[in-house]
Length: 243
Image (cartoon, rainbow, N blue to C red):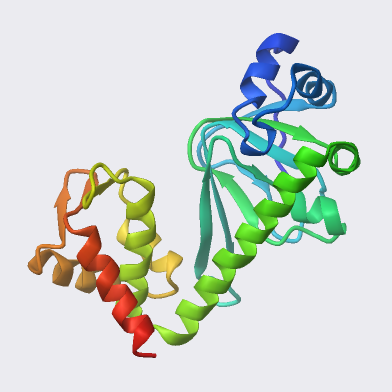
């Protein structure tokens, strides 16, 4: 693991304000946040730098306070498999902290990022003594299971073009700009989309061309405009219903 402590000290009051954006910490009292800052270590990572590596034995938990992370690993054949991207406000590393097993994926900074970390023992102590954090972590793990179940279902049952449509729909729902439109920005590259749905770049290019001909999407600069979320949703739902 590459670990870089920030060169500047973060005053306790500022550290509390920064940590308050973490979803699992929302609503915590000032004293609770102060207790967390006392066991935090701060790190700055630049785009492309690795924070944890697949099968690492490190066990810290990380809180993303600035920037964005990519969670991925490589198959035996060397193909990248992208699990997800994590924005500021998210955490990662909790699985290893809980079960003491090696890392299940590699995490790399997508952008310049500021991260706080705590040891696995401090993380478990947080859960033991704070019911609010414990419940938030339970909700987080439940969401992960539901998301992974959905992806396993899609990979097992949907054709490649339908998996691409489903992934675009997921991205669109995070960036809606109106009742029926969304702008995905920055848009993933064709290779990144392929790695998200376990296919190849040519299949992504072909399906995006099809969707553009159907006036469902519009590619503009570094953005992908979804012009009809309802229709795209219906296309995906129809495939599910016919399985």
